Amino acid sequence: MTNENWGEIRQGLKKKVGHNNYVTWIEPLRFEALESGVMTFTVQSNFMGNWVDRYFREAILGEAGAHGLDVSRLRFVVRKAADDPATHDDQPQPHAPVAAAPGRPRKVAAAPKGVRPVTASDSIRLDTNQTFDTFVVGKPNELAHAAARRVADGGEVSFNPLFLYGGVGLGKTHLMHAIAWELQARDPSTKVLYISAEVFMHRFVQALREKDMIGFKELFRSVDVLMVDDIKFIAGKDSTQEEFFHTFNALVDQKKQIVLSADSAPGDIDGLEKRIVSRLNSGLVIDIHPTSYELRLGILQRKFDLFAKQFPGAYIADGVMEFLALRITQNVRELEGAMTRLFAHSSFLGREVDVPMAHEFLHDLLKEADRKVTIDEIQRTVADHYMIRMSDLLGHKRNRVYARPRQVAMYLSKGLTNRSLPEIGRKFNGRDHTTIMYGVRRVEDLMAQDATLAEDVELLRRALTTR
Ligand code: ADP
Ligand code: MG
Image 1 (cartoon, helix red, strand yellow):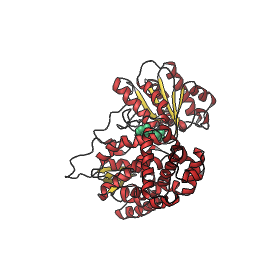
Image 2: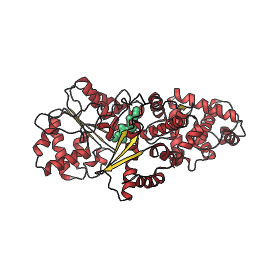
Image 3: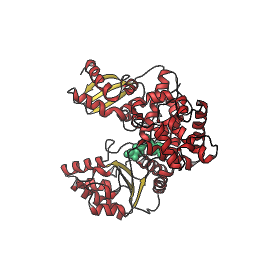
């Protein structure tokens, strides 16, 4: 493959990932080589390589495939710049091949003597960033957090397994990594095995083929804590389920802790055998709820300093984090992605990013909600919610019973539509744009102190954007 091929692949990627992503992440990649299925690029930082690998790997592999190239893996080499004293050693290096470089985080899996160790390619390396310290706790995840803490304290096993489930990007993997870090920190001799169900299955099949079931069994049964992430992969594969079940029972009998994650409750996982479901249900089953506005804002605020360090020279205006928390609601990973994009743009452009610019840069992520929400609709929904008349919502009564919903409607109009403040003002009985601005700010301030209001706003937002 030549640079020219890469040029063509890049063009294809541009369509796939959108202009902004393309400029920020794909264009700066420098193609180096394609050898035995490994495509190598040079990048400016580990952070960049990790990011591309995490979010654009599928797109790149797919596009390369479409050009008749057989690429199975991406590799990123950090460009050695003489003027770059910080080599980003402290960056998280979770899933990208660059993490294989020296100085990576401690490995967790420790195999017993005489048994083939779980190799780096089996056991997913722990992400140094995914600890309890960096996990932001809110109502939606407080139970899961408490249970994870309990497991991480070590000591006697009081529930087995701990089964965490919830939607994509809500922190299941983060909590599992946090448990592993904590257990290791408390007692480095604890054998913690964190593994994805996919890898578990892969190893199982491999052991069958190599007629090494004994080694396989001993390996899994010799750990103190077994964590299997995303167990839906096991479902449906009968022999793996069987083995999983035996391993599971053996560990439970030995009072070893097991932690599992999935995207739905045990009973809702397709193809999972009944007796396994009931065994899982005999432990502690906890779901992580969708994030609330408060939690999202908390997460963004917690990450702010970290991002500021990663993107020197980036400036993010007041109100942008609130805007993100209001608009990007499905998945914390997406929220982080949006934040990264804004910081990256600001840093690359050397300009402060404000809310209108955020709108523009995040166009593709936001368009879902942009679709059809109108100010009229917002006003009607808010009036209904607070059980007041439209005439009172739009009128001039200063009583809080009317004033608060009015301000909430202003806030949502600003956040959920593309209308300018003067345009919104016109829709609110010809009010001045400064009045709208005041209303928006007021709600922002209040949400930070008043969880009930924040919840109301979140409910309204969902009602408005998900119909
Ligand atoms: P899941 O495994 O549930 O799909 P992850 O644990 O991979 O989700 O979380 C996705 C991203 O969001 C990760 O980068 C994680 O660190 C972050 N994240 C999720 N929840 C939180 C939280 N409560 N506090 C801080 N970061 C979070
Ligand atoms: Mg996960």
